[in-house]
Image (cartoon, rainbow, N blue to C red):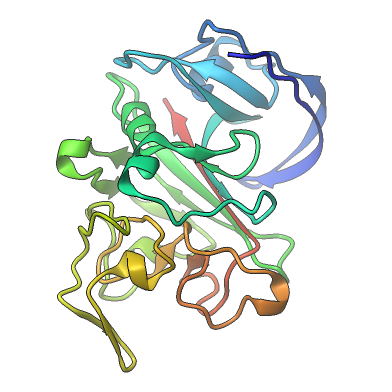
Length: 263
């Protein structure tokens, strides 16, 4: 494992708190610095944002994550989709299980790591989703009071708690409740389409209908943050986009970020 250097500066509106970042250097080591980003912050609340090595309780091995260190704690980034790296989310079950992308840029942390992170003994977890549309620099967020990803034997089933925020609860919007659904990819169909119908189009796989992305589809639901990223001049009217239907129903978003905080 090589040494990673990161320099970072700027500002961010997060959970209603404006935090000024200072220029910082982060040097993760072979040895984990905590169970998760929240634990690292608990041990040192002057920790700065960057890449860290963690080893959640019950994990057999350590792994690297990007930590956002804020006034309210440390948040582990599990997904970032913003088109900056041109990362494709048209992946197989095996790839979604293990994770892919650039840990300091666009990436998916991996379902197995998400399961381990959200199933630690005596450490609950919550989910924060940060979104921004191209014409909304203030962005929007959805906070779920609990977040659990089941093991692979249960198809990485999604469980989220009470919602708060200003982006809307897209997981539970309409008749396609995605809470409690299994993860689906283009090569492993666990959705509820038998078949599904949107307009005049019938299909049996939400993943294949939505650019072969992986997500907790129902039939098919109103959220899919792993859809195809599209630029501002071509971001309206796509079913296969970076989508949070209760925020912008017909648009592909500028970015999405998903964070876990443990406590």
